[in-house]
Image (cartoon, rainbow, N blue to C red; front, side, top):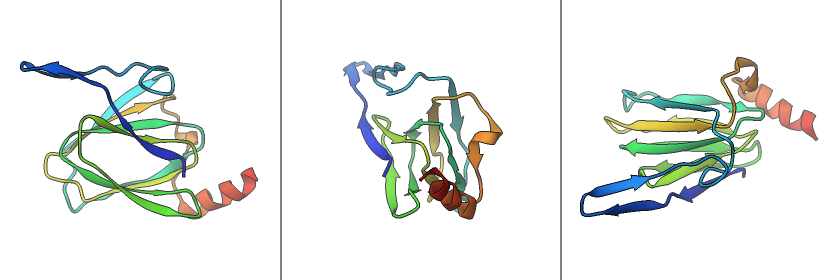
Length: 134
């Protein structure tokens, strides 16, 4: 499975905490795009796609949601609920997001600029792309 949880280095004292995210240092790729998601209702689901080349790190800045990650052979569930842990998702991983808490805010660091052609939005096409790569 091409994903992992990354502990982000926290700096702080009694005044508060800070995490610095640097491309090719704390983030294993050059950051080309940052976006965030908010106001997703708990009964809604998001994602349902894969990326051909894009890598991402997703951080729950507030609240929580559950990711279903799928490499075409195996599906695993990951709860993201801490601002000091990032979920790295590599290439060719199907992702779904479920069980958003009220007020959940996710920030996403991406290795590429937005390109609709980079997305695989149909699960059967995702499985076919994995076979074509072999």
